[in-house]
Length: 408
Ligand code: KG4
Ligand code: ZN
Image (cartoon, rainbow, N blue to C red):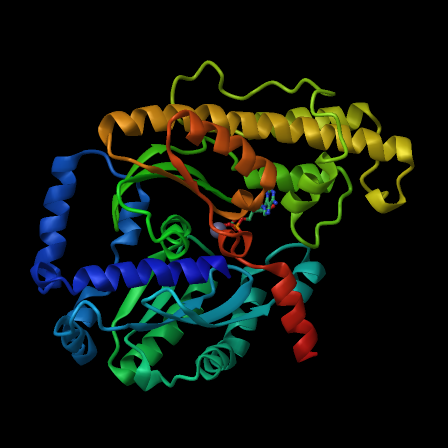
């Protein structure tokens, strides 16, 4: 769900930006933006997607024109649609940050049945519920399509079959009610959601984005203007948490990360001496594939049987699993700390006015991660901005389960 709310936050930033007098001619603006971008140097690959407004549609739609005429205080009401993976979600947010409604329809039953996301099945499931989910979001927010200022929709990364369902719906609503559409990039949304929770947060800032599929360190200079300082060369930290949880036989219902975090509290973090990845690389990139292998080998050497759920393990067995979980977490996060510290140094040289480090994405809900990164910001006299867990992760499982129960 967070990714949807974050998408809306980034959408509002964009719409607000577009309403500035100097940006009244979107196509011209885009060209100017491209020129500026070339002058300013390397930009994250995700910029190319994140600036992907539907400009033609935006400039030709009457609502966009009337928005250009609005004063800066005028409030926008944006409908967001997200279908990038296995959940169909819609929400309505005001430009003052107020979340008017959030609705998620989960495909958890399909996940269990197929042992993962099956794109064709997921597409069908999205198509079945999308109209209902959007209507419910509008009803809960007590608005109609006519009250909307724009429609935001996730355009990637994600499963293209699934993304298409959301984009089709967004186009339908926007087309019928003459609204602008804003395409939103998932990772940009994770970074910009911090602006929803921390009103003091100004550009430029550093963002560490840690999720199941991405590990990014960026310098955010403005909406749509990012410099990528580092990325993962193989797996992301969330993937390492998920595999560790699976191999340790943990309960994956809330995803692997929270299960490892919880078990790690019981363990000795120095019990297994895992090697910290990429020590010799003086850059801001990450690698978690090697650590995953180290964890797998440690689990095998302790003869831990993942088919025995942790709840049924003997106390000795449970202790061994907890020690591995804690040792993994210490090194996984140490890797984050080391790269993050270097990124702070690099970014501060480029932009000495930086005051904030934003940490977002599913793994940012981890308390151990937060406390370790807090030490880095203290050392550099920065402030840590961590959206609450419900806004860090894409889907708040407990909310989804509640919703499922309510609809059964
Ligand atoms: O951002 P997100 O919800 O979805 C993606 O964009 O991937 O991140 C999901 C990832 C999963 O790998 C999940 O295990 C991890 O975030 N995660 C955590 C925690 N909560 C979620 N990892 C560590 N500790 C947590 N408390
Ligand atoms: Zn995410």
